[in-house]
Image 1: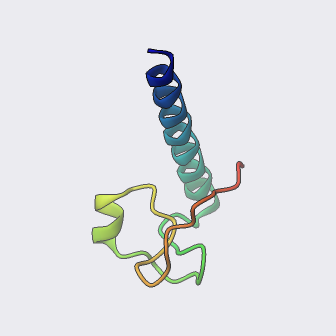
Image 2 (image 1 turned 60 degrees about the horizontal axis):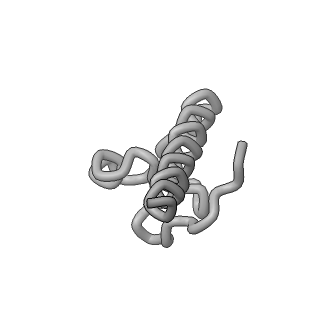
Amino acid sequence: MADEFHADLEQSEKLLNDVDRVLHALDAGTYGSCEACGEPIDQQRLDADPCATTCVAHPQLSEQPSL
């Protein structure tokens, strides 16, 4: 039971960090731009994953810095 709780907590914290990162990107005017190359992220990718930070040419960055 404790393991499930910790897994749920970690998942919730990751989602909260992702949403926080998106909000900061919106404020900065950079939402929808690839963090690796600066090119626009395809709308279909953002529709599928609104927290995507890279275009399909670049792998999703595994660790995102906290803002």
